[in-house]
Length: 255
Ligand code: 13P
Image (cartoon, rainbow, N blue to C red; front, side):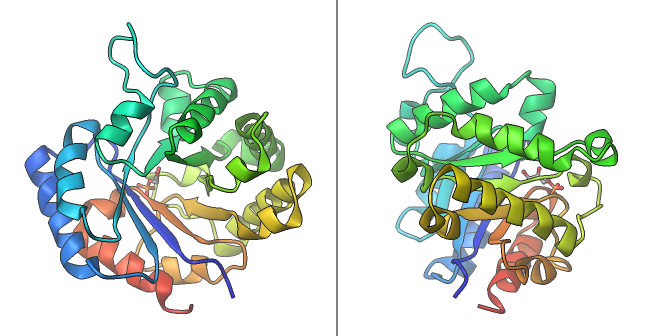
């Protein structure tokens, strides 16, 4: 039996509080008692509290899109893991390629953030993935391995098991170009094998590895059929309730 599907909507820098509340309400209406997939919504910081109120007492979970590793202090503009807990977050997305590219986030920073999140009981969704020029240079595996090992540095097995890994090839994000299911599967399998080498077979077979990059209602069923693809981190298509709902329904068709 494959792992339970995990579908997260990364709303990125979209939606006013009112729009976020509307979208969360539409998701809630369909999934208020749904347990066939773990459903996670990642609104912008400004809408976290509003969305938390709406999905409270449903199985739908809340995620932030980033955080800083310190608990509190003079760090103007940053948000701490404690603040995210306070706002109702169960998860936090860390190391997204947009943060790596535009905000100089390094493997070392991502590792510090993962440790801080785990310390406060927030589950990290950790993104890895190669850029187009890296894929074309045949460096996909090398890049993913470096990001993965960097992210997991000094993290003990019982903590590592709580992490969700998101493979997001940068060239597939927001471009409409999805990795072909077998192309994604190849990297997912590699990620799972690497987890097996770093920890144990048990952890490698339990850990969730999800795919991100132009996931749509039309391609989710093909992706989820692959042995090592456990779900999706959805950007653009998570901003419209009908598409996001169809993606979740598509992800549970086969299980
Ligand atoms: P798109 O689904 O818009 O390609 O974005 C993927 C992504 O970056 C999710 O984190």
